[in-house]
Length: 237
Image 1 (cartoon, rainbow, N blue to C red):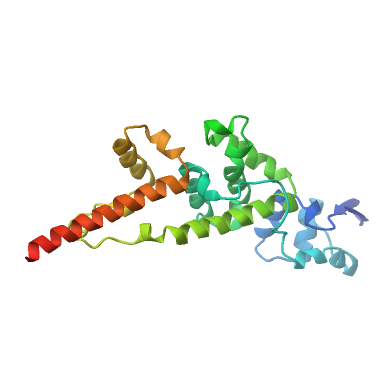
Image 2 (image 1 turned 90 degrees about the horizontal axis):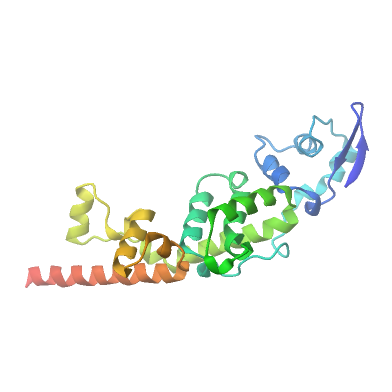
């Protein structure tokens, strides 16, 4: 950190992303119009008049946060629980990065950082990790979140078939009646349907690895589509 003085008193400014707290990074991202004055004021905790020297000191803001290094995090999001991934997906699509960065970090590392990882994902641990992340630095937290977003996109591409709308007679009729076809079932209905099929609880399905649940959904969807085609072909004979 560098130390400064103005007419109001002393203040400090970071020299790089390794000294920027996540909460301050989110505050910067939330500024209506990003300016050096706005950034300096966020870091100092009070209004700051920016001169050329202060502006130069904050030149690192022209760079992007690091995407390598930082704290350890799960490499493969598909091995984390279905519950985790769906909560991450909901958070990432809920608004701009500044509103979800700490919570997504907490969700990503919750199971790994739990005292008992084998017990599965626990929302309370995710909330604790998110709170810790706000006070940590961007250089330690941002790489995990950037990786998480990339992994979420990879899973979306890998299982894109799950998002395809079924146009069989039954699903079309269900849609016209205001009902949701199989592949468009809400998150909890999806878990409930799998739990009934597997003879276990909804919570147990939610704790299964995302890849496992997604593959079961794919098989169910393909079986449904195959049966629909057989039924349709039978009607046209």
